[in-house]
Image (cartoon, rainbow, N blue to C red):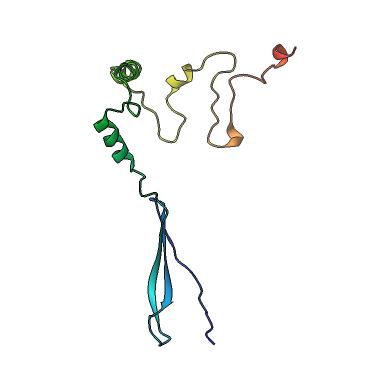
Length: 137
């Protein structure tokens, strides 16, 4: 009788829907001898295309459903481009803080930005408790 003292089963999970595991199997023939083998299971559909294969295939047959139209791309850049081309200089601030003092002006009003401080015991607020009575029916 064989006593297994260290039983474990290492596995390898691959991102292409496959898995592998090392096993020990009997060698072919009458002798009771084992050999190391790997169990490999691939569950990928043979007709399933990889992401770029699908895009290239769609482009070759003229299928435009996977691609953005030119007017969509131009509309997206109309939003992003002005932000990227601003010539303002970023405000400097000390590492580990909540940002520059100028950022406090971004949220103005009765209950604007509050500085939570270094820990929960040093929190400060710019206003008192919020009055919810104005939302009552």
